[in-house]
Image 1: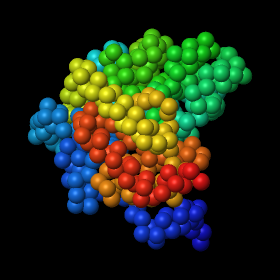
Image 2: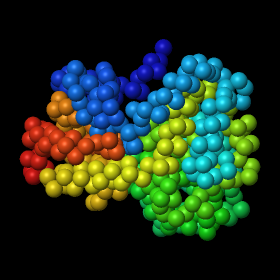
Image 3: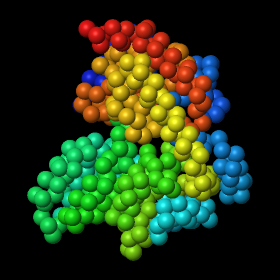
Length: 404
């Protein structure tokens, strides 16, 4: 009998080699207690959280927690059903209403995760005979949406308006075309040149979907995302996002002004054939979204913390993925996987949690320690983080290695 796990043997052996050297598993961290948006107990000690995507710090907001508790008491622990059957409660509609108000759009559809939002929208919008045109560095959920659907897939070079134009010129003008972009790319923390890309897409009669998972909350006048900051709101057909970043809970969504949008509830399989979010989750999300409408001070603080961390790391000689801070993601480039793992382990040992990222999540050959800032981080915490990066670099010989 063929072992269906054999195809994973290279990864199994690689992981076993790392663990046998005494380095702990970077993908098996347990938060034993979470004290705030920026501090958790890991291995029995307080640890600064610098890799949670909790951008606006809403996970411990008192109003959000109170809304969740009330919904849990009034509506129970779960819905046990799909949105098109028994799984639409009052809270789901209130959450969609909050999204419509936040984005200033006519329609909103809530999915059980952000992954499912992309999976559902991409696979449903573009079918046989259509084309999906996407950035080569697109998130896994976008690629999986392409694979679930029957459309032809066309990739263009990351953030290249020139390559997008070239690819679109080759496609049949009469074919249906969906261009998919991301406001913020989560690995390197760079933002898309949406003004140029959206203009090219519209010139070729494409519909445009922008994923604002990492842009919601702090880009644009209303915190709607990079597309708002770029001034292309009128030319974007669909905005997809998640509740698991700035909103501070779990779930996904799509908003749109398209007049036929509501039919998606009946034809979008990842929406139709899965259980809906628990009442407490959508109550937390709705409350958080409405508070984010008035979070200008938090946005300003988040940008201030981001500039401090980016500038501090750069001044200490670390190589960063972006020359200037483009988003609340600050990615530190590492020379190879072994160094990345040792740096990560040193950081966690020093009481700072960051994300370790490697291919295939990152582009080929790119290894990162990825930091994500929170509006609740303090200046004192960032000074500690910078000192810990210095200590970890010394412990692992990072700079000495780079000088060779």
